[in-house]
Image (cartoon, rainbow, N blue to C red; front, side, top):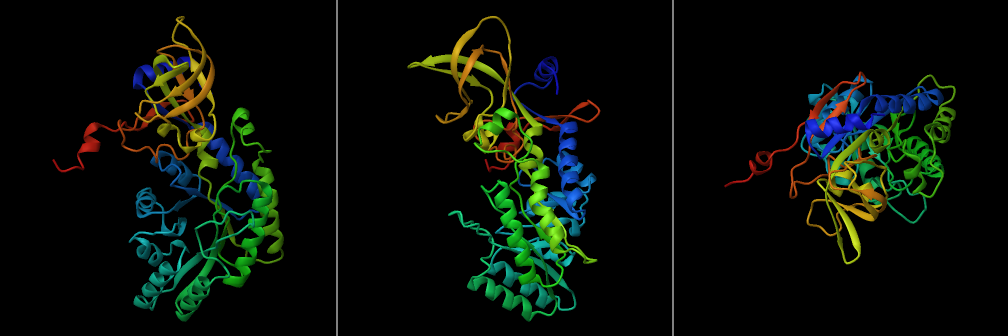
Length: 405
């Protein structure tokens, strides 16, 4: 934790708004997650979701820790390669893979087929490279029977799956080496237990023998402040709880065998959300028709999609004694009526106050559009307490240079 004086120093030196990455706490979270899962199943592996936050500094930390890269586009794949990843440590997922998929497969990369068109594309690659073994996994559409069906992956009992398997098996140089799933809005322990059982059945059914890997996707709760956890209306499991309902089942399934698959999970927000803060400043306070709003130099875009659903952890660093007491909607700089960063804040605010929003690491930096203002910089407080810039602020030139004048 850093003190108010440090936040004031950061605001004075770097200006606001500003992202702050807390490296030491992030490393502790990473080690705790891996430790809990490997205690139950030593062949567990993190495959970090680049789409959640592809800040290169953070991705390099994960690489240095031995984590894999989970990418869903050629852009993210290019970053992983630039960071020095070999293809066998890159997992390519997603429904619309780019032109680099073939290169990835020919170099031994991990891939999970999402649809029939992708399967036929891989078959063409195999036909053109008949002397080379092409390995690929299958993305399984896992239905937990809760009334919400994902659009991703192959329905295991569909005609598409039947056609995919038929086409792959026609090629002697194609090997199905793993299975993968990804579920949204299914963070509870029962959902993780069910997906594990379904993926074990899928591995037995579609791979045969011992698969090289089973990927359980993402969607675990990560560490968060108590006030945020309470807003989910359920008991938030810890990493040990998740490991107990997943890794124990997999260990038992492959008990006694000398070969055991790698088991991936693909955390993004689980790993990073709590460990980036957003520092912004109150620019003005006004009351309109009985509604008091505090206008900041940040925006809900800077906070990520979670801010539309939950009240993020908020700390106020007071600027002076000129107090405004009451209830406020804290709003952003955009011209959008719904740009509300915190609803019905009850307390004291003043122009010039600094606001620190927590839990903004996931789907914020990567989702911020070039709308009205460029994105702001990010600094890290590294594990040695040293502060340095890891993302410069965008400039007007960055934005306008791509247009034809």
